Length: 105
Image (tube, rainbow, N blue to C red):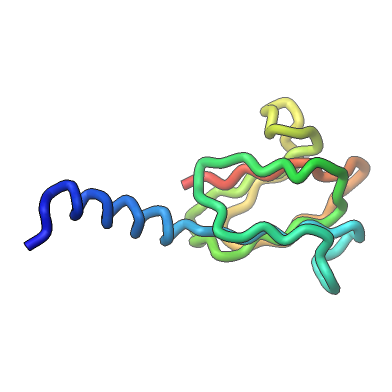
């Protein structure tokens, strides 16, 4: 039999795996072709800031109920929010470049 701590550990691993997202960052204002940065296995409730300016961001591997927030400043400050969506999404920048993405649980 499994101990309680083993079962709890497996439950945490399953929960993290269920929310693993992928972000693809593009220099163009679309989400086609080759991405500049490809981030995989991103957990939820995290802010991703790849360190440059991008004009397209594709988010995949999330559920339709997960909120995805896009920002035009690094580190996801609330004042720089430029878009919110649920589930897999491609967001294209407007007047300002995209610099960070927050994936909620």
